[in-house]
Image (cartoon, rainbow, N blue to C red; front, side, top):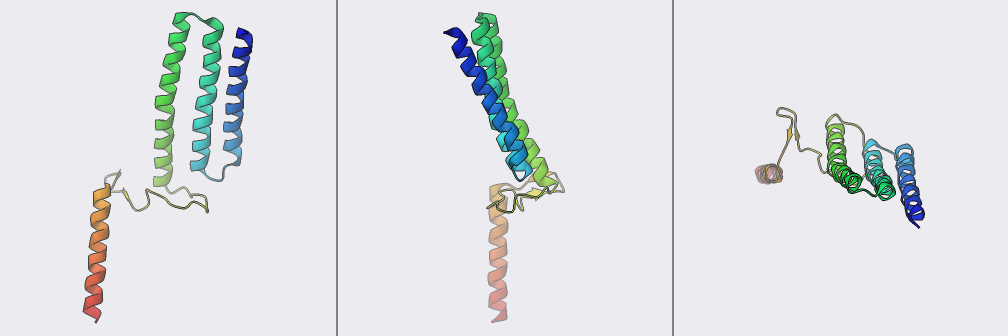
Length: 139
């Protein structure tokens, strides 16, 4: 019975990693490729590590596997997020059917940071006030 459980997790991991590979090949832009590969590959590796933990079954191996899985879940999405931000900053094109870019107009090249939501709201408020002032002056 133990072998079937191990086989299940190995096949599950293989399918997740295959999905990640297909996502890398088929997705139209770097942002979607990163999303597909990050999620699927993380679950694929975690599934295979669970199979390893079940196979060996010692407390030491199980603790190592648990630590590796936690480390993967904490670091892989953060790394993908940082790469996506860098890709956005350098201007890599988004898929033409992308609905919105939440970082558009928020990057400040002078300090290599992003405008906070309150800064963006204040700028939008200033723009509206200027437009209203211009409309009043033209009439």
